[in-house]
Image (tube, rainbow, N blue to C red; front, top):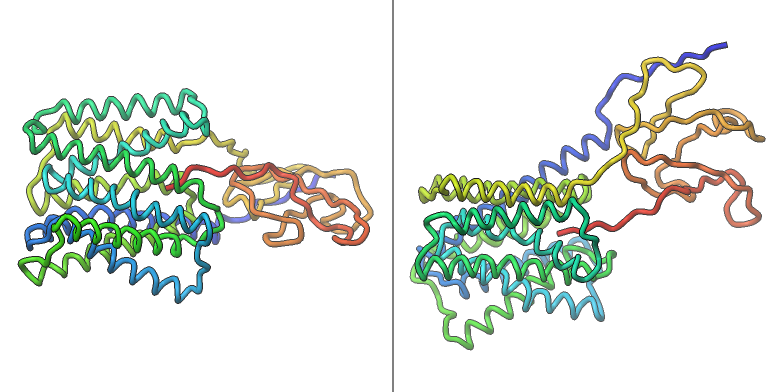
Length: 396
């Protein structure tokens, strides 16, 4: 006897809606970060210098982030994690921001943004040097692509002269500082609240930059009070909102997809500075920038095993959608009957999200469900996930 089961019509699942929301939030985050160049240049025109602008930006951002932490009642980092977070802000983030915005005062924002995006390749070099990753063909291809892009951008015209050379060095210094920042921050415990850590980082950066400005005599009020409006925009639109958007977006779409979507940031910088200031990249520089962004995509791509699509009708076997695998499906075949009735008799009951002994699994992964009979503890029939463990990926 042949049993025919028709496939259900395609509907918008919660996973699909969550992925769309995450994509939008990551793009909003990239847009906010990308517009920071325009806000910074407007602040320079209003009489701000780099130390004053950055101290004001991080101080205001820290106040807003601490308000979010208080509202969410998030736990604060303690012990070694707190010390590392303070160091990341006072040294790492302060240096990165100082180099980046110092470069904006000397060369075009579009070139600065593209040079900054050398940091994914530098993070990979550091990971290989520290033996956290292996130099496989994909990583080597990405590094070669990034290096070729850098040579095209730096070898093109328009970057000569002492001022421009200093700006290029500052932009590359920002990339190095950010790569070190990400490498060190990867050692923080995974359970820390991102808003609490970011609040500590921004506070430490504000204190560090303000102290440096006072010690060097470069911290002073701007000539135009209206310039503070650009600092507010820089703190809110280009700091707090992008951080929150990226935090939620990464949870929805994953770190790899978020990293690729974040390549919209330099595109936003190039577009906005071209619209407002008339900045233009030469064709060679544009080709180099595309090569650098392509290296980011290559670094984040992973080979995934795609399951076979569900047939419209199946004989003998049944195709059961896996609730933990998004739109992918896992083919289940009848197993040896056990002493249970219904769907459980044939071993076709999928994992319940949040059920006893279950945990989320990645898209496209096959889940083997076993129900061992135990004494005490879990009841007979409790579902246990024997699938592969999650691997921690590199994140920003």
